[in-house]
Length: 101
Image (cartoon, rainbow, N blue to C red; front, side):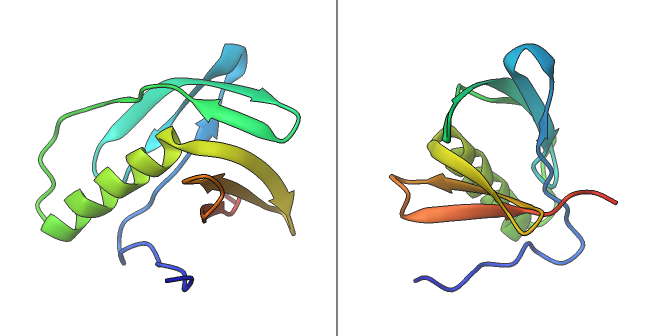
């Protein structure tokens, strides 16, 4: 279960940290926003609010649900090789982000 799950082809998941402890991004179909707190290497992300467009593809819907759930269970983060790694589910799983060009 340690093999990475690539993002569904044609979909883009984004995460943007903004000022004053807010964040937002795209979950592939819907956009979302919320708040976060970071201290040292620890991070906690509060409840996320997302738009309610229906995704045409059932797989996209499931990916979006998993992505938002993962963010809301985030516990730590680190920068590795110019990528942001967010660990969640008590550090058992991770999300890996690459910077937008």
